[in-house]
Length: 447
Image 1 (cartoon, rainbow, N blue to C red):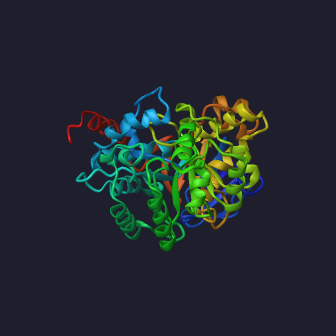
Image 2: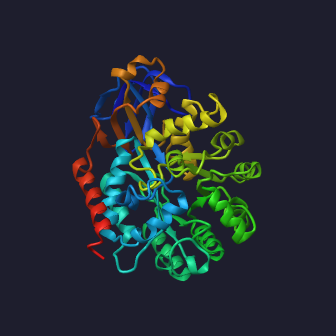
Image 3: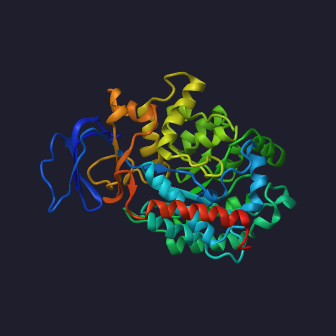
């Protein structure tokens, strides 16, 4: 494929007002100004006139099953929302996860996402293979996928937040996690599927599980993910239970490092920010979810200035109902400015967090996150005509207002979205699968 006449934002190099991308197989072969100097074989030519070409967006935190549980406790804090949701989530089975994941991943694709993580940490017994269900959904939709095998072992009887019936035994968790890694994880360049180890949070997981999970992940060469420092309630819980704030607790357990990325990190001290930068620990910033739950505004500007990896995430649909990933670029930018002033986060910095920043969090900056020869052809092409044409700067037009229409989305050179419509799974079928999963979970007919 050859894309020509587009405004190209490589992220790692100067922007090209009218240039070309040449794609051969699953890689970018050339990027430059003017017409393409050559076209491979029977190349499809795409006229990008009036379009903005960016790297595909990278979603660094999600809970896909929550598509089936949207609208729960719309005015609650994180802890209130969780307490109201745990028993509902305990009803899910593989069919619910399949439908919810299909809808959630399709929605991400339509908002320019080419790579997504997922943090799945509830596994009701006897309900099928929930982890496999979401992996199959990602294969059908066609996104690059980083599912995180989550877990909870600390129920209310041991000082945790979740009810005892939704937690698992440590040995059972570690065995299932190792099995998932050995079965699904593909470390090769261009991989469509990589698995991470992801105990849920300090208020639902024991210190032993955190430590042993880190040991398992590092012995198998995979990454680590968990929630951290999301709310003031979590701060209070950690001080009461462990005598320290969340980041210091995670640090003591060996959970800071270049192979770790943490979700949220809203409540950080100056020392925490320095430790993230020193250790290379990544942060998945989820501004809409943090706002929806009243958690606060994360110190993303400070983290970026310190040199810590920062990506964007939509979080679970039950805490940020149908949030599009592209919309989080604008939300992140506006929240930082609301807290720190109009120069706190520029449109280009926000776009970089959604692309190369997310790739850094996932350890894939050599493969994705920028438009460079040799990298994977994960490309989003946005239409900036019509109303968007009133803004001269294409990146400002993209980031400041409503997200422009998505003309094309490529994952490894394969078309996933064309003309704003999914080409891998029918959009109506994906939406229906999500609605059916919601009804199935809410009625509990399958339980």
